[in-house]
Amino acid sequence: MQSFSIGVDLGGTNLRVAAVTPEGERLDHISLPTRLTAGPHAVLDDMAQAIRQIIDKQPGKLLGIGVGSPGPLELPLGVLHRPPNLTGFDGLNLRTELERRLDRPVHVGHDAALAAYGEFHLGAGHTHAVDSLLMLTLGTGVGCGIVLEGRIWQGMQGSAGESGHGPIIPDGIPCPCGARGCLEMYASATSIVRRAHELGLAPATPEPSADSAQPLTASAIAQLATNGDERALKIFDEVGYALGLSLAHLVNALDLPLYVIGGGAAAAWPLFAPRMFSTLREGSYVYRMSMPRDPNIFEPGITHIAPAKLSDAGILGAALLPLPARSPAPA
Image 1: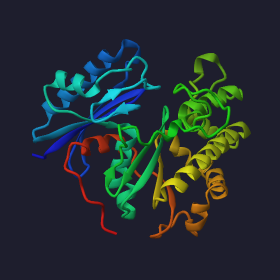
Image 2: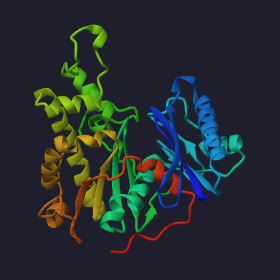
Image 3: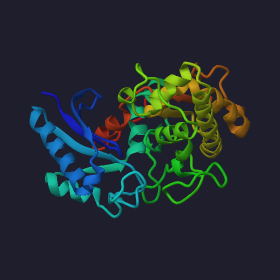
Image 4: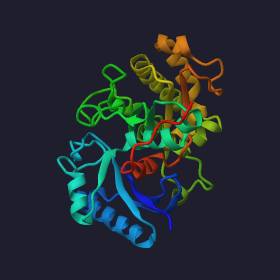
């Protein structure tokens, strides 16, 4: 029998729950749509039911339950404050509501911070043996997590890492957070689809009939770009520009050894990375001082920007949250 913890990834589109060993092996998982239109308590009921279902199936010892949620999230209380991608959740105490349903302790963290934590211990951070990293997650929105010397940096009230809502374009597109020109409005999967509609793009389909039309997705747009569609290529060039602007500020401010790009839209790395690197080189003298000779070769003492190695870093990081803190991997 293997000891395990439960990791939960609460997203604006999907809700995922998994049993994970301390070594990062996933034993079981459940994925279901996030029923936002049914209200927050329906989503919490779904989450609690999935957690109980997985616990009941595992013969080993339960070590704890960790939940990653979009922010803004006040920690350690676990209270959500007007989360742009979780309509109706304002003021909800996520931790208390889940503990009441499960009659067990629950640890709550910012989803992007937990993705960074998972990537740090089990992904790129472990591979490159760094003591700190920052991770941007490109999904429904743009999340950001920071791990400093092996520990999640939460900030004073759990709000550290809201770089997705850092304005980068003056007088840019209005963002649900209340600002304008935020990174999330230019580099998320949602923004990629919005931009494609603005440019009149439609995904390729086997038959030109209305019945065969498929919904426009970031991955479909990436495929169009890979096939040479000029409008799709323009979209990912814009994504790279936005990421480069944001990374220039982050590199200048933090001077970390590793910055990781993850999330579903990060699969389009070859399409946006060239513009991202050129914009970063132009905008950050700190990066120019410490940039690698080859971005694909890791060297100690150099600033590296790299794609994430884990496809499920968020849920793995959530499962690690209730466990004792680990030391960074030795250099």
